[in-house]
Length: 107
Image (spheres, rainbow, N blue to C red):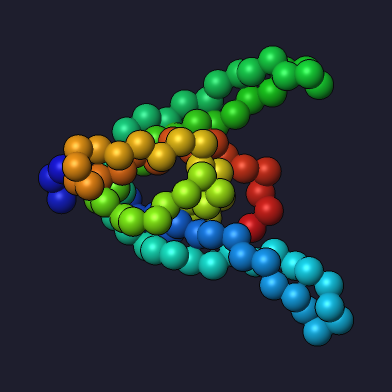
């Protein structure tokens, strides 16, 4: 993986459950890493769902190896949140491909 191809900056976040001052559970997103990435593929796909047709923006990021990335995490790219759908290892801990779908916007 060449450094010159990693021309984008993304932030990987993880949801963590907290309790506010009144004892109410709340979710907060915590940064687990800001890394350089390459966009491998970006497309808008139309899916037929139970509630009708919908468009989803799918994007694949390629990054250097980062331990601990999970499907419950999300990627922030250009101030937009993308939910992780698949994490695929490249080589032997050489890198990761993060397959994401743009989320509804709960930043």
